[in-house]
Length: 327
Image 1: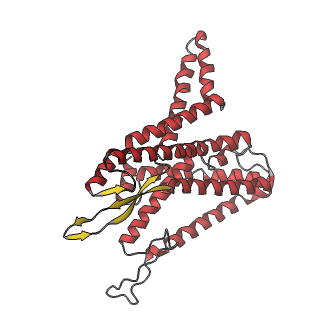
Image 2 (image 1 turned 180 degrees about the vertical axis):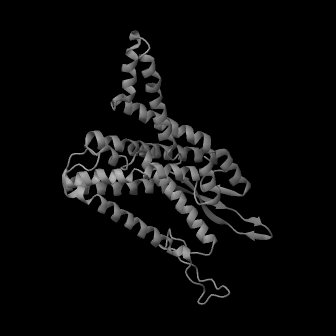
Image 3 (image 1 turned 90 degrees about the vertical axis):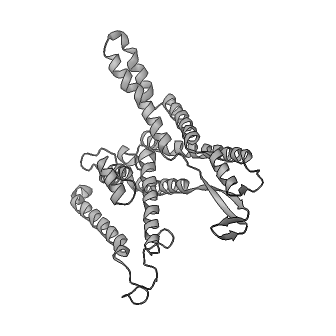
C-alpha cells in the first residue's frame, strides 16, 4: 500500500492498480511458453500442453486481438446525452445558448462486479471444506463445496446473477441522477425533450439502467472466456487467462486510465500528446533560446526507447529458449 501511494503521488497512474497490473503481466513469459508449446507441438519447461499445430496458434492470436479490441471498445464506449444551455453569465461575460453532451459510460461499474462475484463464489468452499473434516457426519459439506467449485451450470448461473446484481448495486451507489439533474437546473441546462428537475433524473436513471444491462452482459462474456477456452477448447490455462477474464479487464482499464493521465500531462506541458496523433512531439510554441518554435524533448523518445527495450527482451528470451523450441 505504501509503495502504491508513492507511485500515485510521485508517478503517473493509480499506484495500487499499477502494481496489480504488473503482477498480472508478470505471467506473460509463462503464457508465451504455453503459446510456443502449442505452436511447435512440444513441451517447454514445466508447461504441459499438447501440440495443436500452427492453426490453433494463429487462432489464439486472432482471438487475443479481438478480445483486447472488444475490452478497449466497451471500456471507452459512452452514450452521449445532448444538453442545451440557455444564456448564462460566466464572470462578466454573457454566453448565448450552447449545446454540450453528458457522457454516460456503458461499462460504468468497471471490473468491480466481476471481482465481487468471484469473491462471493470462493467463500463457500473456503468455509465448508474445513467444516467437512471435523466429523464424518459432516462429509456432505464437501459435496456442497464442490458445487461452487465445479465449472457446472450452477456455478455459471450464480456467477451471472452475481455480476448483474453487483453491477446494479454499484450503479445505485455511484451514479446520482438526482444530483446531476439539480446541477443542470442550477446552470440553466436541460436535456432536449425532457423537463428539468425530477423528469430529468428519471430519464437519466432509465438510460443508465439500459446501459447497465449491456455492460453487465459484456462483463459476463469476458469473465467466462478463460473457462470456455480452457475447458471447452483445450487451451493451456496460463494462456487462456490473457484471453479475457478479470486480469484482462483490470489490465485494459488501468492502461487506458494511465494513457489518459499521460495525455493530460503532455497537453498541460505544451506537447501534442499521442492518443490522437499517434506520436509524442512538442508543440511549436516559441520559447527563449530555442529556434523554430522549440525542439523535441527527451520525453518524445520515450516510446521508442520502451519499444526497443521490449524487443530486446523478447529476443533475449527467445534466444535463451531456442533449444527447447527446436526439440
